[in-house]
Image 1: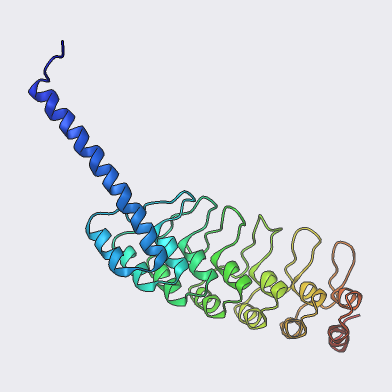
Image 2 (image 1 turned 135 degrees about the vertical axis):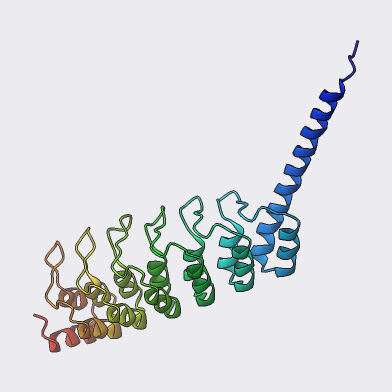
Length: 256
């Protein structure tokens, strides 16, 4: 025989069902918020936040709406999420942050908004060990690099998971000459070398035949005769790779 619920038990069940329903609705709104942020849909973001969507909802990769909006280049959505107390320093499953996402795609306005909200400027990715400055340097995003340097990003931070490379090494390797100049102007260590083969910025640029980056590094007082762990110099690397113009520039600057 089924026993009737006592009044108190019925209320308890009703409360539990109400909470479960609210939780399900909240999760659904959170998922919608992730999608709206990714698509740059500000009106939908406004509606969802007003309805109580979880501003720090995460997708399967640990990304939050703020991370998606930063990656999508939606400054108004970023500012709206920050106003609703989005966690500016939340990290995804691979350790990325909203600031790193904005830096990678050259979103200077978003970078500044995140910094104003106290984003950790020197946070490093758990996956690569790269900071926002390194990310911007690799991508050749000069405007972001300048913004981060102005905000006092650590110009010589080393990526422990990428053989202790610096932003200058990444920029030199990728041939982003103007980024190299900006980093040098900010006091970057021109002779810093990675921990593996002891390759420095000048060697990397010379080996890739990047004449203008080599020129910038020479002007930045790079050690022309520094050697790798295998005793190679920038001149040797340039000559071996057939970059005669780079080799001639190095020799005219005093490389031996």
